[in-house]
Length: 223
Image (spheres, helix red, strand yellow):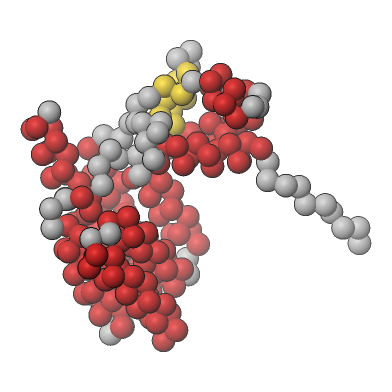
């Protein structure tokens, strides 16, 4: 059998990843026009791999390609967030239920280790650290649920949520509230209570959406 040489990561994939980072950091803010020629010049590439990268981002909902007008970073509305969080609550609730059923003692130990990082970040007021640990906690739950389709859809939706101009953890008291929600969820998982784990996760996701809505409302009043 002849070995087939594995090609390195395609250029357009690398460009897509760099653009994702710039979009998530809001260096390319929601609603902004994507200057293809300027980006191609910055990266020292032709516009062909850049356009392929933009097609990938468009399929993920991160940019919008408009005929004869060019490419724009997707601007997510409050209605979009309502609809996305409703779906996320259902999907992540299902993950929590499956995890309560399938989790081994080793899995629960992994979750407790991640939760300890949440506690540490909260104690020091480290919002960035809390956010990273929170992402790790949810991702670990999704791995324990062991449903790759759920994982794929959730990851795609989380990419779109990152387009929001606001961050729920910046809301007053939200970090402490989120930590308490994680504690209750971890207890339900440890108790193998599938129904309670699902309900707590749905409530947790909906609490995050409510926090975002309060921040958006407060900023619109002060504008």
